[in-house]
Image 1 (tube, one colour):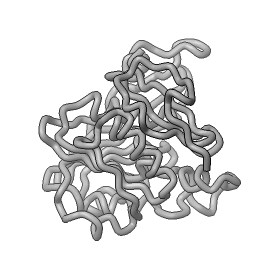
Image 2: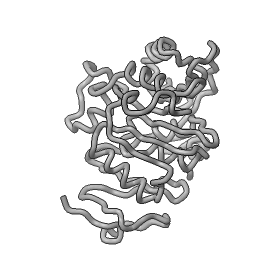
Image 3: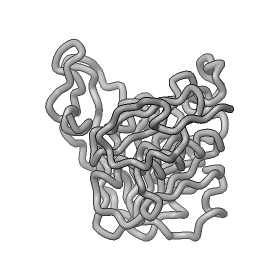
Length: 263
């Protein structure tokens, strides 16, 4: 497949990026509006969405903590969290080698190799790939749709990202519980219609729900996403935070969402 350098691709950016990293045919380079960071994406395959950005604004990472991001895709969560927090190290786990390769090149573009590592692997066996209780935080933007529901996208990468084809909700929560340190935190963005299942699975595997925040497209519309925080081994007590409203008008973000995007 033909490759180009950033200079050859004539992509303008003010980022202090490594311009020797190749961009493959069909890929584009997008600004993340944070620390001058950029990310490689392929519009015909899969690009990150607002859910990833909102999750990055919900996650809390303290100084010196180690973070695991399941289903990392092209590495959007580790890159954003490295810009927004003072975590010590961020690891992304991705089953598709093509997506993992894009994530590694995005990490290299931003010169973040010492802070972020990307590993190709299956979430279902994550506890066999990493030591038990080795992360303070686990984040995940998982497939939302049960495999047998809906019509999967004809594009395999998009289908895997959206449908529970290669992993399911139980896999994600079970493996998170194994990798988290005691009192480690679990963060996920998902769909409200599966909230009962989410909370039951978390409780089943010893991750106690602690914070919920519903995301509404407009103030008068029902939520279409929910942000969830859990604590491994935590006591039973959950806080429902004020709703997060995305748009204040047609195509106009609220101030809170603009801040999350870095505008």
